Length: 367
Length: 202
Ligand code: SF4
Image (tube, rainbow over all chains, first blue to last red):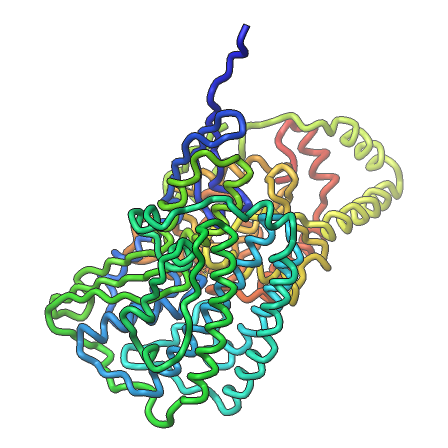
């Protein structure tokens, strides 16, 4: 008599140590094989887009820190400020732009460190978490000296940045980069040839080039699938067109490729910060913008490259003191969709590796 | 087990359904000790030893909701190292006795927070970390989806203010909770609860 088997419905989350926040995955299993994955999102919906309609343009900067992807507060602020500046026709002084680039790249490193550390825990490499957070703490000290905050900075303003960096900060930043670079090699030593790590990530969760495009993946997820697209190169904003950096691309599209892309991105960020520190011009760092600014009627869509992918900001103005509508194109949202689509067919243990490799932040998915 | 969210503004929700704790013998011991001269001394000495143990091994549930969870992770990591005060994260509510609600709690998430709290064994404690968990914080006004304070669904012992609170602030919150635990009349409360057939110390 044949054994009667049936499909198993498994709920992962919303409280699960490796869903990186409050994500619920409804997984249909056939034995150990995944037949279907349905993400249930919205457990962290913060109605931030609606809230922005009730606050003035200047106040909204504080909301972009918290309501959107909280690991990359400064990149969110940059996207929002760029959008409003384009709407109101504000010109940012050179020094302000360079400072913004420096801080965005520092934040990219901090975000990737959190990703690497938490993914390490998911895959059983707890040491990695401790190492990554050790470096990150030193970086947060740099942030603290300038912005006063560790996670939420509210440092960028429409028209520039809030304050200049203190004396000696540039030196401290160079010291940090000096200290940080060898640690990237350390992560490579720890993981890249680690057989357990390779077994869990190499060839797992492959997302092909065509699928990546079709499902709107962006950022490191797309670049690991062979798409050499980076908004910083394609549509340069701030001063990225004057700084030399490479866009790391991998062809294989698996978790391992995504890991390699992110590690290389950290190295490129270091390169960008070094150049920006060298070229940092003197002078004004913020344009004069009235507190109760009223951009003319119109709409604008601005794209930036956040550590997770293409972060779009669509702002509509009706000529009033607050935006008429703000729509955030969140990179985690489309990346999550892309990878839950390709999870079918893998084993249940791979869910953790795949999910971790997308680097989603639920606050970015739900907003 | 009721998991539905109570209507907003009702304050701390009712205790879960009465359940018989298996502390009958304890109640008897407490009774005997109380009748002896100097018995109270023995009781309090034993109690403070137990409380010392409980306070020095608080196991929180790893349960991050939003940005504050990143600072909570930082508190567990290298520089702040919560392990040294006996705080070791557990991944399941069944092994945890402390819930650190780190971050904003949406209305969709509220019943789940409540259920997790109900799954934790007694005695259990809750730390509300950050302004969002405490009162809604930056998401208080013009917002339709965030709960205005997690104390609408679970009883909170310590509130840690900040947005996000620094890891030092969280550590202070935990130390405050430890101080409180050390002073608790834990045994007597459990014994009384067992006598009454009520749920024990919460
Ligand atoms: S209190 Fe601040 S840091 Fe904490 S969850 Fe709320 S917005 Fe985020």
